[in-house]
View (tube, rainbow, N blue to C red):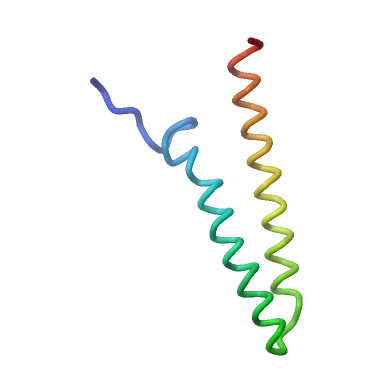
Length: 73
């Protein structure tokens, strides 16, 4: 049995990366809000929110692509 390359499209790491990015960006968003509450700029939280939205959009596109590749049921 040959192990599939985890770095290929559809491999283990390719599937795990969007979820890892979501977790990290939620942490950054929470930290940005904490910094804002302690007097820092709101731009940290806004930037994290914008990047988080782009990751959700990327994840949505990835699911749509997989659904199209499988074909209709």
